[in-house]
Each structure stands twice: as structure tokens, then as C-alpha cells.
Length: 263
Image (cartoon, rainbow, N blue to C red; front, top):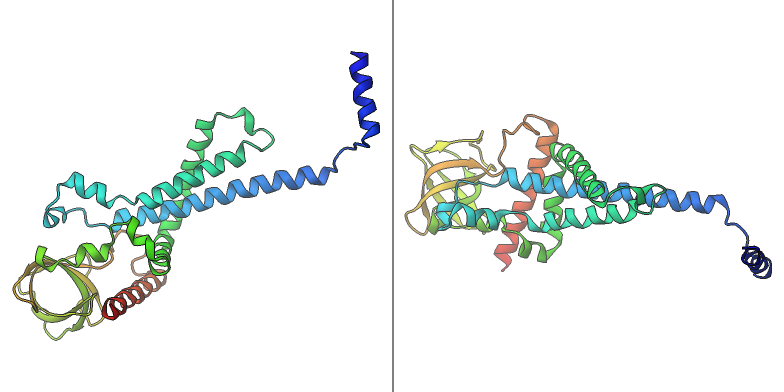
């Protein structure tokens, strides 16, 4: 034992080894915790998008797409964001393991606590409108994003299957008005007797979804009319925040319409 001790002391003196300053350990610890918290927050943002996409989805239209509910469910799940949430949960686990007491905790406990924290934070972000904002940013700026999602515009651009969406451009008569779909095509909407649900406002510039039947290449008979964004869930109706979100949604719809016309 004495020989081993002497050997270690000799090596320390020979290689001039000295203890690292305390601030290095503190900086490393703070960095690890910062990365851990950042991973939780990003996971929360991912969950906010997941929550928005799930609540904004129209779960009753699967029959119009000739699919079972199970098939429609599998197509509608936001796999991109679920994987995103999973990756940052693992990143949080990796960083937490290197904290001072991280090695004492079970990995399952850490991942579970991280996901729970992301769910709580993500729910707050969702009610603040961040889910929609982030989804819009990805859809507008990352061309390959739509390859990973069943995009809402694609689902509702199916007049042959009884699904149509767009913006009201002439609102003179609620029973018969003009709508321009998100590809720039004008339709006469025959809405006499149609059910107007979900707080739809009948006015020019309003974005809507319609369930009905295509009667010709320019006439669509409406059976049910819904708002483009599923409102009335208590998250931002009748608020300035809600107005800002609706403006952003309208801007995005205009961009998609212009892109479709350009193609």
C-alpha cells in the first residue's frame, strides 16, 4: 500500500499535476443543468405542437377519405413531433446523468419525470398559442416538413370526396356565397340549410372548412361549415392573443395559395 501511495505521489510531483480550479467544476455543472432544462423546454414546445395538431384535427371526416378510424388515426398522429419529443427526452436523460447526483436515479424515472415536465410546460405553451406558431414556422420554412405530416390543406382540398376549404371572398348572401380555395380556385357555395358550427363568422376574409358535395367544377353544395381553426376550446377565443394567431394563420393560408398558383 505504501509503495502504491509513494508511486502516486511521485507521479503527481513528476507530472506537476494540480487540482483543477473549483470554477471549472461549477461551470461544467451549470452547463449540464442548463442543457437539461433546455431539453425539457424544447420537449415542452414539441408537446405544444402535438397538442395543437391533435385538437385541431377533424376526427370525424375519415369516412370521406375512404378510411377506417384506425387508419385515419395512424395517418393523423404527429410522428415528427412525437419523435422530436422522444429525442429531447433522451437528451435530457443524458445530461442529467452527468449532474452531481444523476447517477443515483433510475433512467426510467428520469425519462418519466422529463416527459411529465414537458407535458406540463407544453400544455402551458399550447394555451399561449405557441403550438400553432411553431407548426406554422416549420410548414412555411422547411419544405420537407410536409412529408412527415398529413397536412391539413391536403386533407381538405378534396372536393370530389366532399371536403373543401378556403376563404370567403364574397359574403352577400349566407345561403349562396363565393369561396376561393387554397389553390386559388373560386367556388359558388350553396349553403341553404347548411349547419354553421364552431363559431364561424360569415364575413369576407373568413377561412372555413366545408363538408358537402361537389355539384360541378365551380359549384359546391354545403352540408356543414366549420372554422378553419377549431376554435371554442378555451385557449384563445375573444382575446388579443387569439386575434394575433388568426392573423398568422391567414397569412400562412395566403402563402400556400400563392405557392399553389405559382406551381
